[in-house]
Image 1 (cartoon, rainbow, N blue to C red):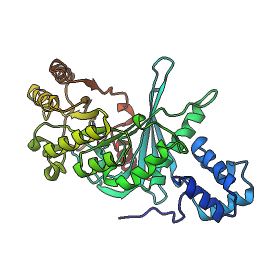
Image 2 (cartoon, protein in one colour; image 1 turned 180 degrees about the horizontal axis):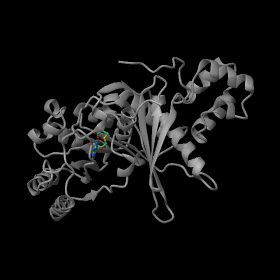
Image 3 (cartoon, rainbow, N blue to C red; image 1 turned 120 degrees about the vertical axis):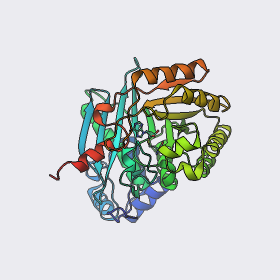
Length: 363
Ligand code: SAH
């Protein structure tokens, strides 16, 4: 698999001990490592040149040994005021995506970052644009975290007074997070830590295609992250049709691992269900889904009407099918939300902006 192009280790992702060692290697003092950590994680500033309380010599010595931001924003698409999608070019030229979603809930606005964990994806789900090119490579922990710095810059640019900061993080961008679990955990440690971005684990959601062993490893990592399982079907035959990896895993092993996750963390599991027209959106599907989930300890369902992906051969569900499916689940006592389609105009489904950029002629 390809490797990231910058061979200098990244300061982004280092814990306090790592930063102390880095600053020492560059000839600095322990208190300067704390200042560096403040800039990076407290102020979300990655540009060494802007770190005005560090002596210039130290900044230069750090820059010679370590990198910070290796990605750049190459495109931005807005859907009204609610959603902004960034396309980021990594040091080796690969393109990933990160999405900022804004929700105004009275005096407590929510800013949710949807972040990527891989360039491309190995899972090959039929309705997903990221699966098209297969997996290019895993993102390093620093590359996962860089997405936060780009979002911080975006929020700073558009703020009139003091810039707001993200309130929630969903790992639902490009890639299968649990396929890159080691780097994901390194990144989420920084996202969660008091010395890092300091998001409570309950504000962080990891979404997975459903890799049973990895779900258990995530539970053993000892955080209370929210877990979302991309279920999308109610029989193995139907699920394998949409999600090739289901052939090896199977529905029941995924449900068992998700139940173990609930028992280990006491966090309610979310099941995502992408409605595909004529494929998994019939009343019979709703009945089977309700029956499966009523046996599950505690969960809720997120229904996502499929975003059309060109060339997939799959159809969107009709509004009537979505409505009936939702009603049947509710009547059966399932806690269900329907995801609004606000990201559609900015190609907010997984990987779609990248597909569009790659289809466009080179500039
Ligand atoms: N690999 C992870 C996370 C990335 S996808 C996972 O499978 O969960 C995030 C969610 O968006 C998943 O539930 C995925 O199935 C869904 N999704 C992907 N493409 C979609 C599309 N075209 N329309 C609707 N939902 C889609």
